[in-house]
Length: 164
Image (cartoon, rainbow, N blue to C red; front, side):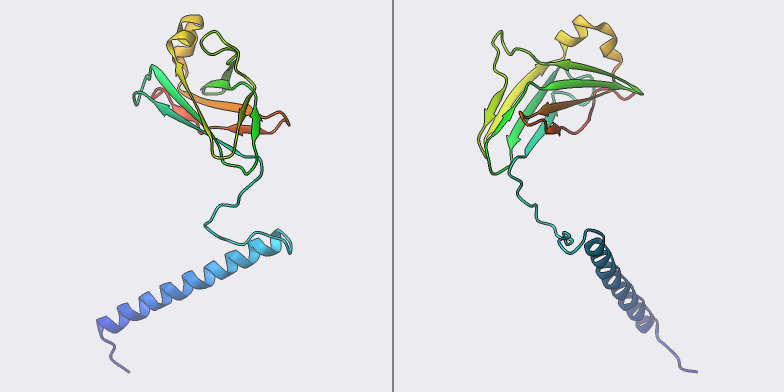
């Protein structure tokens, strides 16, 4: 029998791990291409530009029980987009409550037209919702949805308002 040093064993182990990862990458990439047809999208890390696309980001004033939520809508597409009024969705377990923003500071501004690369910011005070519907204080998550004039829906990530 041949004596193998610990260095050689660890080197062989790392080479085997690298070979398995490379083969796994090619198998995953090949199966995704065949699943999507000949025009299938290959595995890549760059984002493809879409003509009509918007990104909605939410920022909280505090980690839990925020009093102010900042909404930023960015047109990430290549063409201008016409967005309807945002719908605020409060979630608690399996129930949802939806509220449509009709006016901002007593003026109707929706639908809003965003050119490519432009952003729109809106600060939402949570107190006005809690005063109108006190049971919303029990909601633990929140998200925002917006539709464009063609009916395409854009959603924000869900943020946590409370721990439970």
